[in-house]
Image (tube, rainbow, N blue to C red; front, side, top):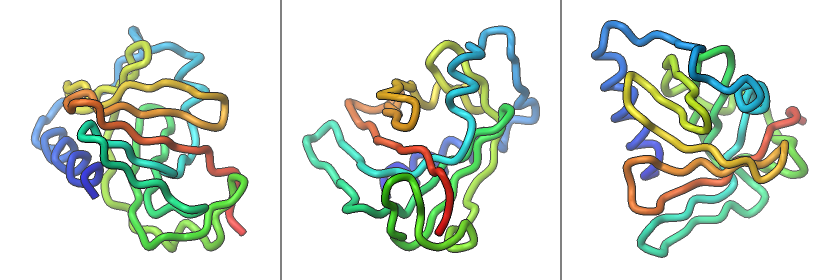
Length: 145
């Protein structure tokens, strides 16, 4: 829930800024292409040592495409081997914002939001830029069943 509140606060700030534009000049095309698609949160780790690891399920999705990021929230749905049991309509679209990718950093509304570390092509670590060690693990969604 902490990540949802953080994301909402950043997006509200972004929406208050009238010029929230994409600038490809500093983006890394390879990271941008690898980042595209739908990602399911599978674990949250907090700087205070607390963590929440989903047990073959997810309730939070991020979608990256062409400088637009969307986040979805919902009830926990089974998530096994890259497939979500259910459909995207089981999740609520919470926020939509433009983002810039600068190296391995995701900027929203002129603010550094997350740092990206790829574990492999289908798994990544998103590190909160403004926290003390908070990060989440996301896995690529291959489809719905």
